[in-house]
Image (cartoon, rainbow, N blue to C red; front, side, top):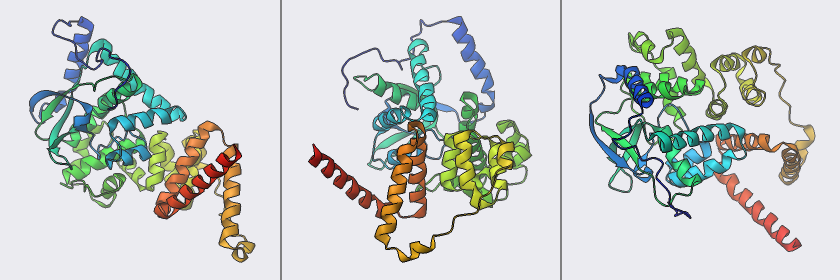
Amino acid sequence: MTKGKRTRYNPLEERGPEFSDPAQTDAVAAMSRAEGALESLDKVERIERLRPSQMIPDRFQPRRLLPGRIRRKFFSSEIDCYQAAKEWLKLSEKDTGWKQRVQELLDMGGSFEEQGQIKPITGAWIPSQGGGYVFRIETGERRFWAACLLAVKEKLDTEPELRVEVVSMPTRSRQVLENRHAQSPSAVGQACEVAALMLEEMGIEPDPSITDEYDYFKQALKKRAPRGFWSKLEPVMQYSTRRMQQLLAVLQLPLPLLEIADRHRIPERVLREVIALPEGAWDTAIKKAARENLTSEEVAQFEIKPKRTLRQDDAKRSPERIAFSGLRRFARAALAVEEGELVLLLDEVADEVVVQGFAEELQPILEGLESRINARLKAQE
């Protein structure tokens, strides 16, 4: 990572043997008892200290943390973990939803400074794309991003070091238990947990070539759960079979709407009412629920408006005139949107462009427009 301006104590360094706060000791013991269900899982092989640049989160971890655009750039190796953290911090300055999540992670990183890293990250070494090996995180992705965000925010001179435990056989079950002990995932995240555990039970592994991880979890919608699976899963998820099946049904939503629902933590009951609407109304209902924090009762009474038909005179107009008038309407509407809502609007537009399949063709056109605008602004100086 880029060197900063000052050197300071590494906030992620665990305390030495002399640390013996009774309250903290009791907390650690309580956490250990709560994780008794993990005793039957793989034995820890060794403990190491690693830098974030030596690690990579699991793409198919059911709980997604990174924002969609940053996530895609990070996992395609366009940016590293510190560049991703920098972009995430910048995004959080404009988006209140991401601001809260980033602040929670920064608070976690700050707590390491006072208490040390109480709980290690678990994972396993896997071959990396560029040769050699990288440590893939099984549990502890929040601690990983807390370290990256804090390092960027505090402009640390050196990479932090995190304590990790190497396990021979990482499991989805351990990920789910970790998620539920830390911070309850969104309804979409919980739907992915149910799907991940079902697919693991059936021996269906993620395909690394999948572009969007939601496509992996959606496979569970087409599968019949193995005999006894639901009763086996109840003590892990702490939900009834019916409740877990309702969560799984959330994955019927299209990929962009799943991302919006996850980002705004829309409750399952609200999503259930959205899915009960005609499919053509899902997009509008999800976005309205995100903007206005609708209840399930309000969504159930959602008024479905007929789609606007193409104006007859549009057929007579040239593509150039249609594009110009459409851009003019978009510009006026976008400039009238409040700053906090503008981020959501741009996310929705980006999602729509990608889903419609013309992102690659449209991008150079927008870049050409940007360069021409810059040239005209420069000429006015």
